[in-house]
Image: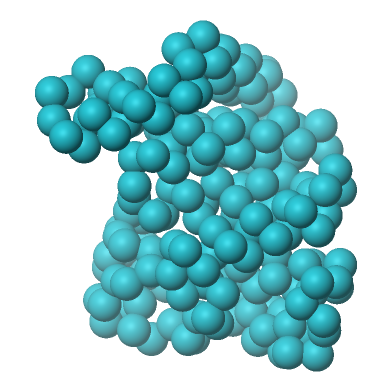
Amino acid sequence: DAGGAFNVYSAALQRTHPASADWAGAAVGAWAAWKRLRRRRTISSCGADADFFSCACAACEQLPKKPSWMSSAAALMATTDGLVRLLGVQADGLVWAMHADARFYDGAVWYLPEAASSYIRAAELVQRAGNYTIAAIYAQRARRCIDQLSTLADAPSTRASDARSRCEQLAPRALSRAAQRVDVLTAEADKAA
């Protein structure tokens, strides 16, 4: 049960040192359990794209209270940056997906390139572990970020101007390579299915 798992991981977080591998494992477990719980309990009432950090629908109000490190995009970004630094090359697909989610859920266009890159990394890691279904989901999320960037880069607005400057940092060739990598990951997942 996702609710029970969330409670167990949350309790483990209270007992472990924040800069330890045990804390990192508990944080990732709590995040995954909370997302599963939210998806199961709220998807029919508020939808998959409801504001992750501040949805006030009746179903979301019934969920367990999120710990402070996942109560806002900024807090979650700081946590995931710390996890990536702490775990280094041992960071798995779920850590990278969590890293991407923090940026995607923020809603700011300037985080989309980093979100896309992190989703691609997550997809590659879980695919290497043999989980093609989850790899395809992460690849689709990366594609969504890339598509949003492409759409915004062509729009004549101030927000689009911010997106254009972020796209320039990523560089068009890198964006194209990212899109190609997403296509390859998706095709490989389709073959394995």
